[in-house]
Image (cartoon, rainbow, N blue to C red; front, side, top):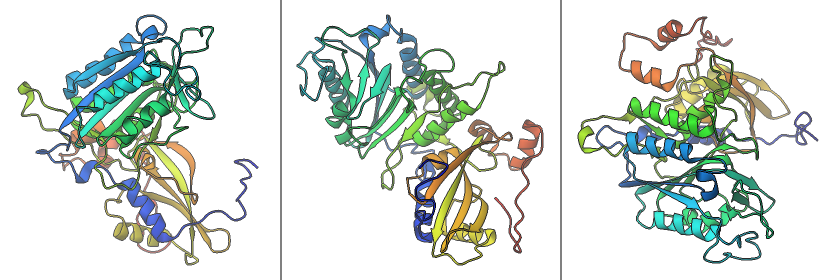
Length: 425
């Protein structure tokens, strides 16, 4: 069987309307209900730990410029203290963690575990640790490993079992942990900790490019600087969406701004505040006011995601108008953030709903067998959150007029429902 001929095509998984509502509500939840100008975030402390192999800092892959990009953006714009740790090759005893638990006190794995534990030792449950790694990584059937660009020795390739190192540290931490991985990423061997989120360059080994303007780190640093210059507080999910949108955009020379589509892994259905980035003001910036980034809207998001949902036990002839009324009444905050595209009866007892959401909303959506990804939809009339934020306090300028002025061509007309009274979002 294949994606063209899925195994369950004759009897797909389905969900009830309440399950559908719960899934959408989770994906719509964000930081806006928490952020206020007087209390921009709930963190008492934020620390940044950057990691790369010592062999690749100034030699090998020469990653020092990328480390400096991340250090500078968090230090200059957010006033976060930073510590850098070079992973040593040690005595290369950490070649097979399944045979040797630690590989000795001089092993790379022990050094990384100690660096993570040391960073966490000064943080409580109201704090955030940001861990940034740049370099090579690879997953195997059992785990996920970091390794240097230097050739193997007679004993094999030095490596760090990242799954095991984080199992002992960040996955059991009381504080929030944001992992920024400029490498491929895999959670094989260990899932996310209850307070962890990951934004990584890609999920495919060998496809991440770590240097140049199209690298993950360069794009990440630029987006962080952009939102900070506009004093916008973003969640980790919003940060992912901003960076990911660059994979669908080209520069003046028709080169992609970002070479690979990044990935995002997060916790779902928790009552904790989403991981978010807000500054600790320096003494000369006490009067700065930062606000939550604007909510992404379907018609203006640069990249939308088309999804399908299989609903069971729905009346035949479910219409756009009924879906629209239901979403408005049952999903607070959904207005203009979900766009229903099509509704039709499918297999006996199943109604298929085709809908479109902004990239950040999709990133917030938990997995469900009855909801499927269809495609990305690049929006030629897309407006970045920066532009929306600049104009959000100007009531005389409508978003539609703003889009027409900034982008040539007509916007997509609101859908007119065949049943009476419907208006699209």
